[in-house]
Length: 115
Length: 112
Image (cartoon, rainbow over all chains, first blue to last red; front, side, top):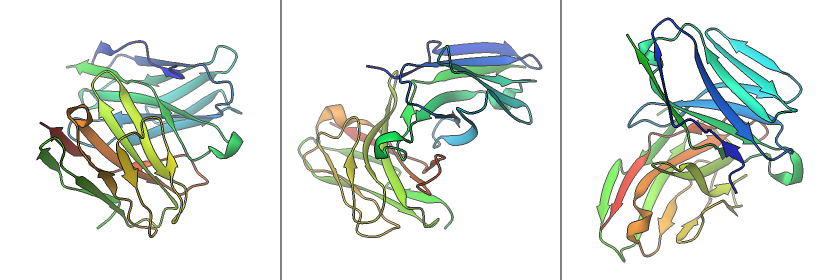
């Protein structure tokens, strides 16, 4: 049972345009969500996060939106740059049941930003 | 060193052999984790440790064991490697109360 789903394996956008990466989750106990970015042959790096008490968090060109009723979050990158080309992983965690140290990851979306 | 280091960077291993992947962090984080990344499957948690002296099973623990004798080190052992354990392995750590995990550079393991 996949609790965090990234239904688009890949996304291609033009430089300067907006990139929107989507993520859906099924576990209503998740209360913290993160996006990680991964370049080939490197470990994932933390990008941005959002708590379930908020519906938006912004950091420079990156904004994460959370729609709890739809169990959906999205990452917006504006403007997209060729250096943003990477695999993006959505992750979620829950503070309940003593499991607040573990993250559940989606399968990732490969973003390609074309010059 | 700063952050998380993993060794070896890559390894080719014959099936049936024993292998230990090493992970060391210098951030004094309480929690540490081992993931494997496979094409089309994302990152799957193998084992984790919330604090030194404790470990727990993740999503795909079979065939793997871990130990956490101290805060800094979290080795992952494959007692008898099988080809399905061919993967890229990432170690990560977090402060424990927070959720952000910091990842190492990974170990690419091939089991023939």
